Image (cartoon, rainbow, N blue to C red; front, side, top):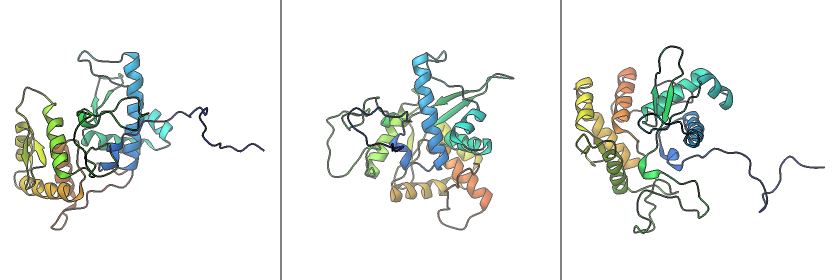
Length: 249
């Protein structure tokens, strides 16, 4: 009797699968949001091959919420909440195209963890030189070990510096200098949250330094923390910013 599963051999044809970036494991996202990102990243690879780029050369995808919900076996409300999570984390940009025209989705990737299609050597291709010094501490976001705080700061600064040459490089904030905000981002946040911004910057700086977790976009993460705190009126100390699966932002 033939079983429904088989051992993998040298000649086994692998089933279709999604690419799941390892940096997602370090991010404060729900399981659905991570799975959704892998799905959107897979669709973006198809758009790359088909030449779906806008006038600025940015690859985009068109993916109806109902279709995503069917593929992931989730409700549309859950998918919309996951899309909001990716948007807040800086991993997704949605562009409205007008009445009866489908929206464009732009999937974004952190520059310091871009990988190639070939992983046969077991070493992901990073944007940093391959002959960089290594030691027992895993310093890349693509490795199993947690990155050191100094390496996180360096990677975050490089990432933010690539966002645009029209503005000065983001400045470090917080006790541990691991929160990076541009002048416009800081001014906008200060205008929206004049009495709470500095305190939350310090709390986020301590949280990142202590936990080793980080955010793709510090401005978006701070706004999320501040809105969450305002809504729930938590007690003193660092609030619980975790989300249950399907919970809206």
